[in-house]
Image 1 (cartoon, rainbow, N blue to C red):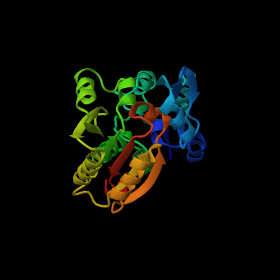
Image 2 (cartoon, rainbow, N blue to C red):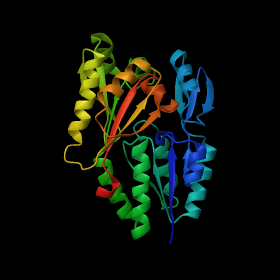
Image 3 (cartoon, rainbow, N blue to C red):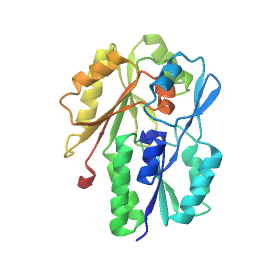
Image 4 (cartoon, rainbow, N blue to C red):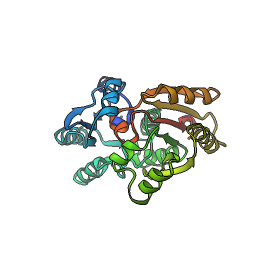
Length: 279
């Protein structure tokens, strides 16, 4: 029986060691802080988040191109089929680069998604299970599309500084949000874009709206579970913990630096997903 190859990036919120143990191929996004390039070797890296909070300049870039090509070549030769589940093509050119390479081989598949953390981990387990049972990559893609459609991801930045620096807020959005001093609740949309889901006058109001929106979206989904991804602002972290205490929180993660550069190292994120057994 053929195995399904798995390629991930920093959005999976796992370390290189964990990826190796699971048999996944990790392409860590590169992080540049004050013109110093670093590869995020560990996910729970509070020091990197602290560095980002005081840095003059920060940005992310593609995983090392040599590593990408080496990984894709290995997977194309080793597995009958390989899937890449990672950052959206709207946030990085990594998926487009991988998709371009895959045209030469035909057995590497970029999965369009808006997933992060435990959502990606669960999606991988679903993909592996379907492939093991069917050996059909099209059925894997179909199952993943259904799973992804039932997932939600909301982000609440403590400030807009890093979203503006990272180019995620531009033009009229940048002008409005910088001027009216509202607190934006952001949604990572199914197609992989980031939109403003709500504007509130206070952080408390935005946190309440965050929980309201994500719980509304899981209505009708059996056994929905949630994950909290948070940064270095203890105040907002504690507030989120308090208002989500009645939710089925299955995991908590520190924000990967590659994400924090754009959302801010003090942003919080709440995600939801269905049980893969119900797909």
